[in-house]
Length: 209
Ligand code: ADP
Ligand code: ZN
Image (cartoon, rainbow, N blue to C red; front, side, top):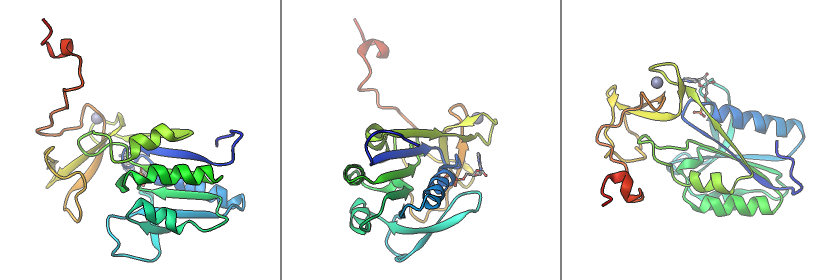
């Protein structure tokens, strides 16, 4: 818990899938409820099909209600007056506008807790997460267990028919048949991945005179 002088702040719970982000988000929400705070929970959704109340669940099976949102503006529009804690799960799927939305809520004295996976399946920063990490007062990076070697897992391995998915696939696959595993850096496989070399110093590329 952050103990700064100001009332409002932003907490980010980041990390690989299966690292316990939803569990941790729900734990913080449960404790805020015990403290008799008024709490609202949102969960990003890739589309609006579902409408109404939705469940947020962790991989250990626990659940609670959450309002589904597909765009950052929906969070801003649905925050009730007198709410003191706002939580958003799966925040990586939202647009960059979420950075302004959570900053505004925190400026108004609200404790904002957001959870999201920090990298896409290629190991690249995911959506608004880098900016949220930068503006947050409190950041936690959680780890899972690599299903291949048992080390700490930090990467999301996308599999299609059980095989590592190529880098050129879409970052967000809606209704796809792919599955995901938590893996460490060593065991993470992304066929066809090329890293952006343009920001490296020339010597690193071996092109220096
Ligand atoms: P996240 O929100 O980060 O995807 P969840 O909170 O939904 O994670 O789920 C975390 C739970 O998933 C763990 O407590 C554990 O029971 C289970 N789990 C399944 N696979 C793994 C794994 N490879 N490493 C760690 N925990 C795992
Ligand atoms: Zn591993």
